[in-house]
Image (cartoon, rainbow, N blue to C red; front, top):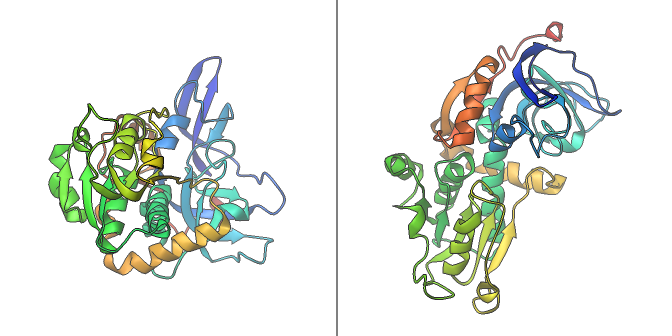
Length: 335
């Protein structure tokens, strides 16, 4: 089968499409024929020299994919079922979704709601899963309908989908971005206001800024997350999943002990089966109201992945880069 392989030996990084033989890692792995994959920031980190994310010298990249079950010994998954494949060590410590076929354990698989095609599922991808998980976490914390919610990194994969899902669930969405040219695009996604990165909080001379946000979805991290914490309203929470700016966080205890704020960590790779089911069900519920194709920056073949990874790494995208693996009706003879 054709697959995009990342290889690093003696300090030399090699990226390219090769013919490889798919093989299970453990007994019980399910074989899935991939229709589509997507390009994530984590993929870009895994495909970098001296990567701290990738744990093998050579592997097939791709932390998420969607397709059809081909072979399974687990009664929970039957041949012909449409699934999303994401999470765990996929694409970082075992072969991932940038391939025509992938073996994965059942805990990485999620059955798709009837309203979602495999293409829709990969436009959503890990980014959209994270976005909806963030929205559900804020709601579980008590976010009220009509609340004013900030989304940072709003033109990225997680941010752009968070804007739309929040809007469809009747929240007032304020999108923060460093790309002012994307204002119209974000308004079309459902944002009611666009602000710059330096407009998240005020009163820099004080420990805390003005109370501005009923909730927030942060896809950036670093000083951006710090500024959000300074400006949440009493009892509000921020759902944080990003570290594009930095993995470091410098703050005080004041947001937590004087405004009763909460920092909610959102993790997609190790999400439980119950969380996966809940998030994909919510995505299926909102599907009739969403034009998923509007999230697509572009569609590329495997051979164009190096450029796609560079663009994700530099933030030069608006929405998702979708990777097509060819004819979804291809047979096992392609292995």
